Length: 289
Image (tube, rainbow, N blue to C red; front, side, top):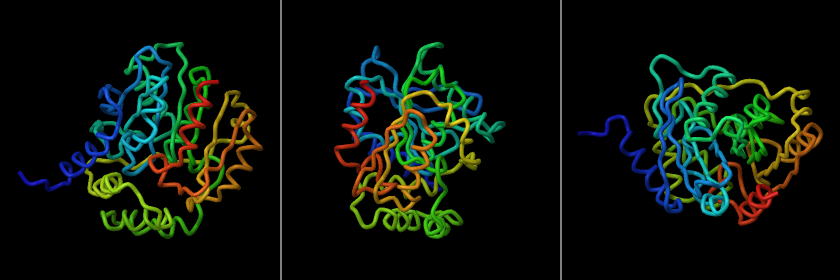
């Protein structure tokens, strides 16, 4: 049978990146009000739970492969494919997420479905759009989240650069593998990207049955001032997505317990798989406190 919609090509590319994850790894499916969520889990079953959310587009949970082994040494890691985005989850025919409240409801179902008990705290991290979701979830369920790390999050503390949106426009209007590759190579400034990861991003351009991502305003300043939990903000020094130092200044002025680190010589889309060793060290130190 012909792969007319690109699904087989996407899943083959997904599995090739997942082969870089540490073993043993467990695939978990969870029923949610918006369809079936797909979670890649590893690490000791009795370890403190750590939930990871990838960026948008074709990032998927597979993108955490470079950090998974180190994080899973002390944590039970649950990396989730985002609802309505390319991945191994399925989207309900009759209900798509439309609001931030929907995303929180979806993540609540995922957390409960993987076995994190009610009242048990978790550590939560997200990259890019996944950071935006993670921050909103922490604001809505602060008693549930022990600590939060945000990896070059978008639309949390500053908007996109105009040049970034202009370069992204052709890919957004008519996504193709070639346009995705050209955009990612531009944003990364010519730094070599993992070829298997890059093929996965290209394959995601033709992935069927995705919903429009939930977007909205940045979190309210008063809400951020009231977020009383440890937050690690890791920013890409070479990000073309937003002004790195404006993001750092804004977060420092609003979050009462934030630690901010700028990771040099890395771009927004190269994270987390092409990050320097400092990323893993910073994450494990933060989570061990």
